[in-house]
Amino acid sequence: MKILCINGSPTKKKGMTDIAIDLIMEGAGAAGAETEKIYLADKKINYCTGCFSCWLKTPGTCIFKDDMPELLDKVKNSDILLIGTPLYVDGMTAQTKTFVDRIIPLVEPEFEMVDGHYRHAKRLESIPDIALLSVCGFYELDNFDGLVDHVKRICKNFRSNYLGAVLKPYSYSLVMDELVPDHVKDIKTALKKAGSELAENKKFEENTLNMIASQPFKAQDALNGANMFWDLCRKKKEFIYHRK
Ligand SMILES: Cc1cc2nc3c(=O)[nH]c(=O)nc-3n(C[C@H](O)[C@H](O)[C@H](O)COP(=O)(O)O)c2cc1C
Image (cartoon, rainbow, N blue to C red; front, side, top):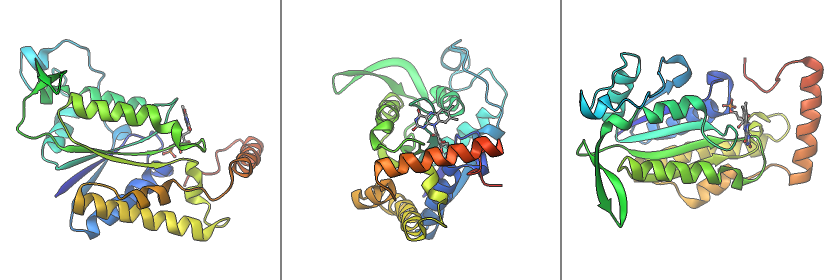
């Protein structure tokens, strides 16, 4: 079982996406999976130009000789693709979308009717199953609705199975070890558990996802805390929750 974990956050090691991905990978590794993490921000991935060469001139191969052909090989050789992205303006980051667009050579141009809906024909016998990991700054879980729907649709478009989504709102609670140590410990344990579940059963248990999404404070208290935090950041002219 190979799990390719994509970190689409431009903050890379400094951010909350990375903390969550590492814990999921740790759990998956303990359950026997082989894992690999890629920072998209370290890769040169050109925007798709929509030339359709990858369908018509050189089927399966893009015109660009950037870092994407190597990543596409990694995708092809994985059983699961974990798309890790923070929520940026209610969707995935630009880095993540650019990567996703460039996966299009894995399907054929022709249309097929699947369950009464147009889909692309498969180029490969199997395309990895896809799971989502996302974190966001706001408090409510419904902030992820658009992104989750998008990723579900991406799976259908690519003829891949959607395995579920690990979602962490109020993401900086992941580093509130001093303020709410027990809560942070429980969330981190649950993230590792999610990784094991993914590796063992190719799905996440509802209890695990609920634990990860749970909040250390009531909504109004969290909001007051966040605004105190922004006040401090403004004074220091620095985002103090980024890891060094
Ligand atoms: C450009 C930008 C747009 C964002 N948009 C949203 C948003 O729409 N909803 C939200 O809840 N958080 C939003 N956030 C907050 C991030 O999701 C949050 O800071 C997250 O922890 C960033 O990921 P990272 O910790 O891996 O850097 C945004 C942050 C940035 C920088």
